Image 1: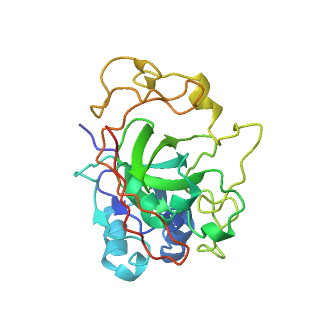
Image 2: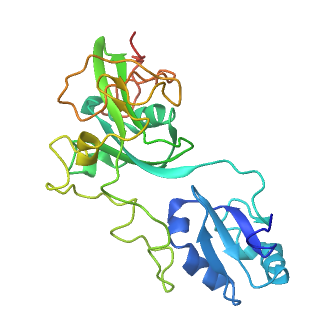
Length: 270
């Protein structure tokens, strides 16, 4: 089979989503040979050169890329591991349980947070938690998780949404390539009343059922890709699909005002 790039490329992983958003401008600063930058999914990118010699010269000078990439490799990526960037909401988690430790514990079961929901005390919209994650899941994330914390039972949803689409390479500013812009994924986006209901869930989840999606009475086409099935007996009006998470229980604790962690861990209920 003929290879697409014929040994003229460098591949691998950028350091942050901010670097990825500005990658074409950053590469143009460090390369004078007109390299082309292509997105390869997740946090990975491809830099294409006109010749293998130019590609190797760029790679051999670590000053060109060490501040942008975690690592860089000559040639195509033979060890392919699927990853993608997903924007998710944590819906229904009591505000008193909101802290970065809990968000990380919850999201860890689906992927790694790359756009945190931080500076909570300065935010005006506390209706829903929004984070960006790097995940290997090939389906939309759509789970209900039941936990016990503070001696009480809570159900909350972890829902992927598409009403605020993300795509790399749209923040090109060669004068200030590291400057974050107001419409960047790390910025807080005020919800559109026409696009969301009161709980901040995209109408896409209410009206559309796709192959393999879990719906109120069970699966649309059989067993879950990750082995999950079942029903929480939740209210039918909830826009979050009623599926029992089969993931390991997140360790959720009470978040105190002074930042000290209270020893009240939660777990998924049977």
